[in-house]
Structures are given as C-alpha cells and as structure tokens.
Image (cartoon, rainbow, N blue to C red; front, side):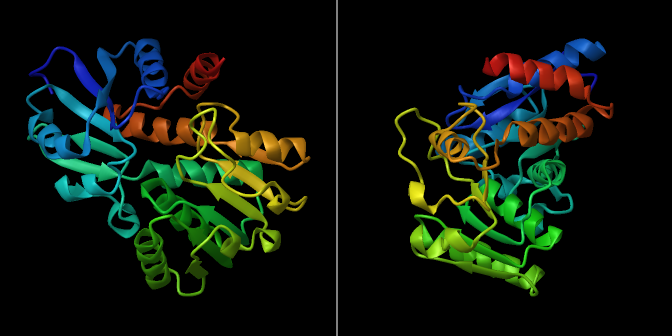
Length: 279
C-alpha cells in the first residue's frame, strides 16, 4: 500500500451521482486522520472488466459496488468472504498489495442490523426486485427465520434464480417467485421490502397499489435518496410503520470502512454527514 501516497477508495455503479457514500466515507477519513479519498466511479456494464483490470495501477485500494454490478462483479474476485458466493453478489471489495480482489457482502449485515433495531416482524415478507441488493435481503430474512418470502421481479428469470438458491440454503423457508405484484399477496404479509430502483425518480409511480398497504404491514424501501419515496410517503400517510434504507447504507458502509482500514468506523460522524447531505 506504500506505493501510493493517498489511498483511493470509491463506488462503482451506473449511475452513481445520487450516492451519498463519498460524503460519508470522506468524513470518516478526515475524522480519523487517514490519508485517503473516496470517489464516485461511473462504470457502464461494458466497462466493468476494464475497471477491475486497471484498479490496482490507479491506486484504488477498495471500493463499493452498486447497481447494476453487484452480481457481475463476483466473477472478477480472487477471494470471496462468507456470504458472497452464497448470496451471489458483492458490494464491498478490498484490493490487496498484490492487486488481488477480495469481495464481501456488507449489504446483508447492514440490512440485518437495521431490521433488528426497527423490530420488524419478518415472518411473512413480500419483496420487490431480485437484483444484487435483493439477494442480500432475502439471505438476511431467511437467516432471521422468515417463514415465507414472496419475490417479484419484472425479469422472471432473476426471481426464479434467487428462489432456487435460497431454497437450497434454507429448505425450511417457504420462498417462491410470483409473476405479478398482485401475486405477492401483500394483504397476508407483515413486511414489504422494495429492493427495486422504482422510486428513485420523483415521478416514479407507486410500485404497489395503495389499497394493498394495510395496517399490519411494515414498509421498507432500500432507496434513501430521495429520503422519502412515493411508497414511503403513502405508507406513512396511511399510518403504517415505514423506513428508508439510510441506516442500511450507514451500517454496510461502516463495515466496508473497517474492511479497508482495519479501524473502527466513526458511526456518529458518518450518520451525521448522511443526514446533512439528505437535507
């Protein structure tokens, strides 16, 4: 690591301009006096291989992975920590002194911690989306003891692939793919998770019908920017418990920071910066 005066970390995805990760990590580096910088790298799908090929030479010593690369990035890893192979997605990568890549999935742990603190009843869950983040969510829910998880994705092959993997690891969990939002049978569920990008734009429609949101349902949207999506706003107006993914972002980011630096992440500093950035 001594080859480079300043350590470079960052986020790869497409798009990444909306991300608050740079503000969070750079505040942590500054607070702890670490000579490092976190940058946003907009990497198109066809540029992913090239990014991995050049990362070490560019002085990049670690990076987060977001949409649409969480699953495809796994193919470029030299080593996978617990959960990456099982989940089939990575969101944190360490680059060692030999230029080797070790992948982690801190999404799974970040989501697990957040729903534990929120005291959510996850027994019967409806999940929108089956991408990289959704895979971490389902893994966390199955480990937490969810009895039933219904998954819908507009790409049926993705939801079916996810269901197949989870059934192998957690045969006691009744997880199944459905072919429509109606098929999620939200009226029978205790927890609704949006792990799809629908809601990132102001004019995005509700991902579910308003009448599906009932009083015994907790609504969780992984989207944190905007802080209140149309889905969350509607849920709150109906008096439902609801949360965005800001704390999940914080907790997964803290774990990533600790993998990269070997130092405890300054939780309060990082969270304050996230809240300020959203204001």
